[in-house]
Length: 271
Image (cartoon, rainbow, N blue to C red):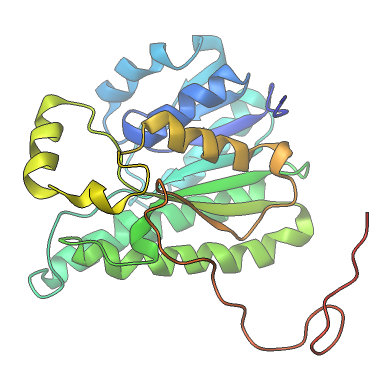
């Protein structure tokens, strides 16, 4: 399937490591032009050659929690490539803690870096995006739907960001701009140290995953890239779980109220 991404322009935050890096590589493989962002300038420069040709990527380091970073990213996309078609918005991970143990400073830092910073970027991209089916994907985790052990601050903040994205989809939809969230489950360790830590802290956790394994970074990234693409042109306001079947809910409930076809009746089917 041709995803229709050739020469479309996307910002990728958190592009130097993890799922952000995997998304950037797959977008480049599909022919997209990229504005790559990460906090660490050296890490970003080191990752860039594995993503795409220098003529097709632009590096813009900075801290997403600092106001103004989102404006620089949008301006850089328009200055270099003359358009903006969307973004991969990485939402970071606050330090491990319980809700009881995390102090106010940890909550404030987590709010700035894990909620307000990503939301600023999403709003800025939504305002500036080219009106040709632009799309954004927020990289979140399964903690949006069920709390994760040892992630007290993240458990408190991530559902709020997912709900803000849902509301933003309503606001941006009339302009043809879509926004979705990707809820990642267990990600395969990328280094021996991570593997050791995962084994010590998460022993037996994968027994609850029907596929009995962690996901590969590219497996999450492929879902994100599809949601970004024109191939997913009628998908917005969705939180897609990519978790090997680990999530147990069938679907989110529908709030009460009239439906498009009137009270108690489905809307018309066309096609």
